[in-house]
Image (tube, rainbow, N blue to C red):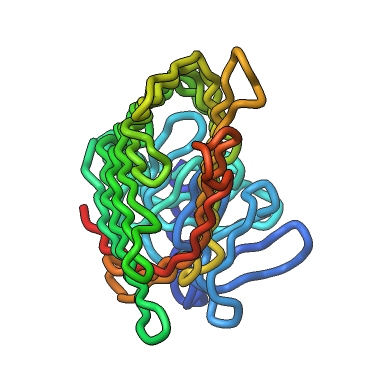
Amino acid sequence: MNAFRLFICLSALATGLSLTADVVRTKDGSILQGRIVGIDDGFLDMETNFAGAVRIELSEVLGLSTDEEAFLRLEDGREPKGKVLDRPGLPVLVSGLDPVQTPPVGIRQLWRAADEDPVLIAQREAKEKLRKKWKSSISFDLTGSSGNSEDFGLASQFKASYGNEKVTTKFHLSSHKNNKSGETTTDETKAGVEHSSFFGEKTAWYVKSDLESDKLEDVNLRSTSAAGIKYALMARENQTLNLRSGLGFRFESYENGNESAPALDIGLEHTYKMNDFLSLVTELDYVPSIQNFPDYRVTHDTGLEIPLSSSGFWKLRTGIANDYNSRPASGKERLDVRYYTRIVFLWE
């Protein structure tokens, strides 16, 4: 035992004299020098001078060494502390009062004294994801012209959400008015609320209600309420895609009467972050009558968002919004198309 401890001390001394950086040997014969940032989730992260940040699958690592003390958590539950010494042909050695031998794949986590335990980091991140918080935005877009024709339009929109990754309640309120040559061409107000709660990794239930008033379509009140299932088809860091399907009830009040019918509620929400400056956001809703499928409404909005400040509070959004009604009021068009450019302010 004394000889073994003497070997450890001599090895540690020799390593300290010969190494000026951490070293990683891989199965393909590569030898990387730099600083091992850490090991977690089956990967080794390393900072190198020649290639920057490098991530290596731990199963591809033959040996590694550190020039400073490290904290380790092994697959068998042990948590040794000390310099890691590479021994070609043998398991790596963690020097210290109680030396430990382990193959590289037996290391579950590795971090330095100046860093935080990955378990504590993961616990804090998980707690933060469950913390409910408000996110809100308000936006305006203004259009106008003068000369041969006088044209003025103003649209405003307020959105808010409260929740976390599992449970969310969303609110929205918008108004759009437009006058051309003294005649009102658009006068609509919309409001709504949606609550969703995930009961599986990708599946959630939802309930929602939308209200609308459109004087140009002679609609005093249009109400659509629905409940159903939402499925997160894609949940990547830079891209999300949610699909929903449910049953609902549609009610419309006109000057000369009312209409109501059960309906389907089908929707799509897609966000794609192209880079740090451009994001594409799309919302699509399809609400057909169950009793008469040719009677349906489709609303669509796709916009390209560009940050206007480093804080991310201000954004510029430009896009297109479509509203299709298969059975419009007499004398009205089925399709309304609006191109817009708006300023958006976000806060939490």
